[in-house]
Amino acid sequence: MASYVFRYFNTIGYGETTRLLLTAAKVEWTEEHPEWPQEKSNQPFGRLPVLIERSIDGSPDLVLS
Image (tube, rainbow, N blue to C red):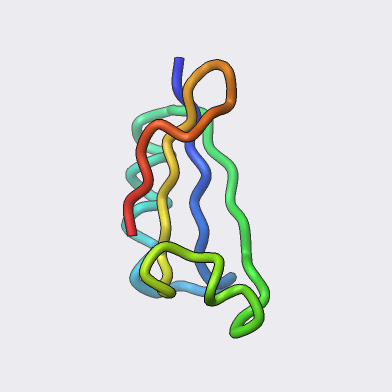
């Protein structure tokens, strides 16, 4: 089964809907809070939120930004 990594600021905002949907779907997910703006260049398109779907072996299958 896939797991998810959600990257966003530690605040309520655009990411809150995603947090609620992941919780309601009862899927395995973790949250990361990147240091901003230091990690801006490491994010897809240089922006947040980011949702990463990981396969069973841990490799990213899908990255949404």
